[in-house]
Structures are given as structure tokens and as C-alpha cells.
Amino acid sequence: MKSRKMLTFMRLTDCHNIPDFRELARRRLPGPIFHYIDGAADDELTYRRNTAAFDDCDLVPDVLAGLETVDLGVEVLGRRVGLPFFLSPTALQRLFHHEGERAVARAAERFNTWFGISSLGTVSIEEIGETISTPKLFQFYVHKDEGLNRSMVERCKAAGFDALAVTVDTAVGGNRERDLRTGFTTPIRLTPRSVYEFARHPGWALNHFFRERFELSNLKDHVPQGSKVSVTVSDYFNSMLDPTLDWAKAERIAADWGGTFVLKGIMSVADARRAADMGAHAIMVSNHGGRQLDGSRAPFDQLPEIVDAVGDRIEVICDGGIRRGTHVIKALSAGATACSGGRAYLYALAAAGQPGVERALGLLQAEIERGMKLMGKAAVSELSRENLRYR
Image (cartoon, rainbow, N blue to C red):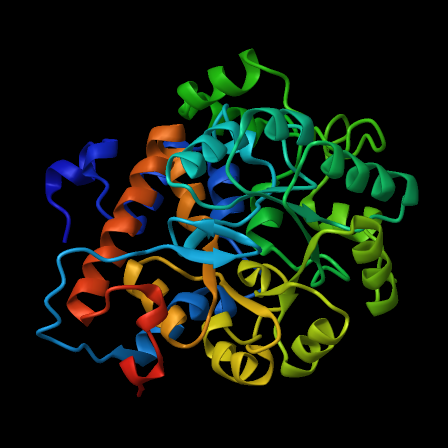
């Protein structure tokens, strides 16, 4: 239980785990913004299960391994990186902190790991391509506007992005009830309730309203929604994204891209096999952080059967629910090539910008390294299901 001092005053140095960053973010953000990060669909059962799934699996360590150092490096999406966890693409980051994707990208660069930006990002493809040297992934939301789709693919090619991930679990927008209750939109709609929240968080309000104008940098020249016209995220999905996206269209996008290609949002063995058949380089086993289909399985629950089905043909990335280094170790032991997540760093971004994200990554890195030593494993490649027991 946190001390009374921490309950009344909290700094970045008081954050020792992801829930601590969540609490600091809650204090620093207006309610609608925090609940957008923190919320999910319907009853939020899947959101909670994404993390709880790891509790149903125990680690079995080997001892007397004589380890002084361990190697946390993995090869994923054709690049060798120094950390088996990377920063999954997320939308609207400059709502959470005025530096947004810039802060997250620089933190990823420092830890030599992958970083992703979303089609609904708030810093341009070109800027990230010019300023960030570590591997870059673009999360592609397929829109009804074919001109916009072609533009994003070509811009990513020109900017030197290393991989393209098509999000496949947004046929319709999820029922995000917290957003409905708080009135969350992008851009922020000024109402008596929202103005009250901004007044209670003057630091956030000053940064948001008196710095660089908020926009969806990769969409603004094609659609006003989200940059000039306020809209909920679910309404944006329902009105702007292509509901007819199917395997044939995904294959055409992969051919147009011509590089490392990922499908994000695969949850079934049948879809994993089809992704491998179409030549995708990797799949992200993901349920969109529980924001889409509530009651669906957690990525870690699905991981073993998907790895057994296609793990020898395609890279399998476990995306979502990770809050501890031991969660990463469990997923790698179950057969994941690597892990990724969004909220784990978004809370830290909202709490303190780039220093927050760097502290969160540093804590996760230390937890993974410590866990590997306690498991008696010198490298990620030594992890296997022999290290796991399911309850």
C-alpha cells in the first residue's frame, strides 16, 4: 500500500512500476484524456484479461547457471534490436503530452527498439523518418479514400519506414463507454465539463492550447475529421475506415508496399495460417487493447496455439496487457518472437514526456534482465515452454 505522502504528492521518481505511471498520468491529465487511454470496450472484460492472463502461468527457473550478463537482444521484422519489447503504435499522442510521438520515438531510439506511429498520429511520417534512426513501423488504418491510402504508403516508403502493419480488427468502432460518458473527442470539444477539467489541470491545458496546434498530421490534408472537425474515435472508425477490407485488399496493400509487412489484430489460428499463406512477415496477436470486441481472448491466452500453428513460418508478436518484465519472459517462453504494448508507455508519456517513457522502458529492461538471470537463461533464445507451467 502506498504511503500517505505518495497519495498526496507524486513525482516521476516515485514511479517504480507501470501502475505508478498510471496513477501519475491520472493526476496530470484532464479526466476525458486519461479515460481515453485507460478505457476499453463495453464492460472492459478483455482489457482486464489481457494482463490477468499472465497470472495463470508460472515461471519455473533453473539455478546455478553461473550468469554474469544476459543478452536481451532479438531479431524481429528483419532488424536486430536490444530489447524484446517494443512500443506499439498508438493514436493521438500529443493529446497526452505536448511532445507526443517525438518523445516516444527518442526514448525508443535510446533503448534500440522498434517504435510505431499510427495513421492517427500527431507527428508526420516525414518528421519521424528524418529524425529517428532506430527501426520504424507504420500502423496503417485502411480508409475508404483510396487516394489517402496510396499517399500514406508512398510517404512511408519515401521516409524510409522499415515495416508496415495493417490493422485488421476495426471493421466497426468498439463501444468505448468511458468516452461516451466523458464526451471525449478529437480535437477536444470545448464544453462546460471539459473547460472545468482543463481548469483543474492548468499545466496540461497551457501546453495543449498554447503550443503547436493539435492535428492528425498524416490525415489532415485529406480529411478534416479529427483535426478540424471534432469526432469520437469510434465515429471516426465507422465513418472513415473501409469496412470492406478483406484478405484480397490486404494482399494488394502488401504488394504495393513491397517491404516488411505485418497484420496487426490476428487472434485465431485460421487467420494466422492465412497470414502466413499470403506471405506476411509477422503477425501481431492483439485485440486492440480490449478496445474493440469485449469478451474476446487475451493475446497471451491465444499465443501457444498460434505459435504451434505458424511459428515456424512467420514471426509472432504478443501485443497487449504487458505490465511487467516477467510478462515479457512468459510470452517469449511461450514462443513469441517479441512483445509490444501501448498503455505501458502511454501512461509514462502522459506522466512525464520523454523522461517518463525512458524511465518506464528502463524499469521493464531491468525487470527482464533480472528475471532472465533468476531463470538461469543467458539469452532470449534459451527460453522455452519448459520454463512454464499453466494453472
